[in-house]
Length: 351
Image 1 (spheres, rainbow, N blue to C red):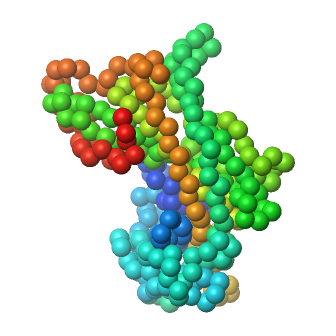
Image 2: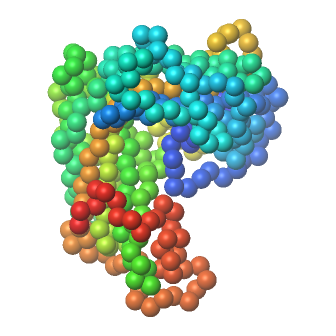
Image 3: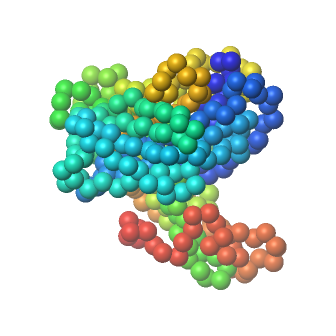
């Protein structure tokens, strides 16, 4: 049973982290009592002038990503410490969302407040998350990179990115727990001289967390955030963006366990790492409804660094000057065929 739940939780993690690839389907003889597990994932993000809340609700039937099906939901409500309540609206097949102004007097978005959700399905199943505290995120100080040329101990040119920042928030005596995610943005010119900008979020192998309580320092220096081989993605300019989330103790535990599962092979017959952490339960704990998931509140700090091709070995562009004749010729026949590509330059791109 624990092995099945460990494997299920790996699938759960893939539903909340946007990945570049996808998992292969695995045929499993799933016990009847484990089928129909509901997965609830969501978070509140405090921004400069508003808060964005998104909750995804799925049903799993055979423990594969392809088996995620939307749940018929009656209501999704968001609660806060002072008694405020907001009703989320359905914005996608399995997603419920709301945007809240920071000056909304009926629903304050403040550091130290706790937030939680309550989901009611059309089958009158009721699920509730444990209250999760919104904590201030300390601003990052520096994001830099180091180019490492091919050498006898390294088969390819690589670039490593390092982040420095604060751990103390100057709000209270608590040190921050942080999660880092990354996005790569690069430019590519196809054989029709069309210029595209492509942005991709990091995959599951790039889950990074930092527990400030494990150090006596008020800051951290040169935390390795990304290590990647030099390819044509760096030929026409490359930005790396790092997003830092503030985490409660519970949210840190959630992401640490997610990272541990990603490092494993995904073989359900391995010895499980233990019961995976979830802060969502049936409101009536005497029911037999199976539910997994996590909801938390956070603030995000963003920092970026631009890697000019001349500083990373001047790699060759992806596309030759003549249009290739092969039928499968992405990105060179049409760079807009790449996932997440656009002709519009991102606002942050200044080069």
